[in-house]
Image (cartoon, rainbow, N blue to C red; front, side, top):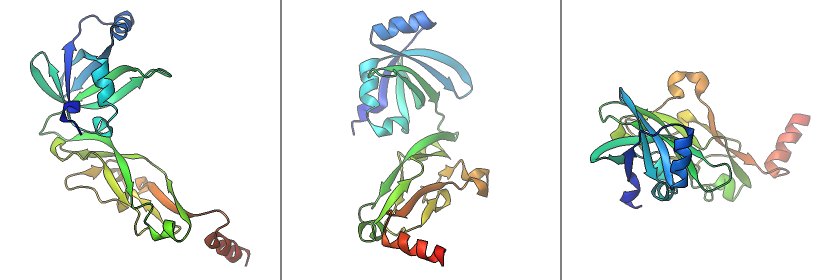
Length: 208
């Protein structure tokens, strides 16, 4: 993965408003805002082609980026991205300043592994039903993972994995789980194929 995608040049902009943003987009620039860390928000512009190349990498959304703003290097996370409804164009970016000594809260993607090798799927005819694609985590910037793995190898037919079943890296906690047991949401379920032997047996049991 090119390290360059985590370094983006940005310029401070003083020309604000919808008209200014429209002019920037016509000039292949992306308007952005940088906020957080108890500092004043700063309006920025970035080269559209650089941002577009970077956002094609999954890690762009969960990795600490470096913004080069007039010679100053600022570490930040992408907190929001607005896209054009049908053109391959990024309309606006929100960046959150990162302080190495303060925890950050952000969403990271889930990577489901061993889905094709799991006996419940490979030999027992089950299929994985993904309930969520990412989770919200809290950690220090240095501990921020690019993704969280969800291993399906030992998941049995009819079994559901919840947030509490995930193995989070050291120093990383789930924001939802911190709210209490009622927030232990389902992540993935291995379900029997419709009309499969397992489902037929279940129906017979129900009828009895």
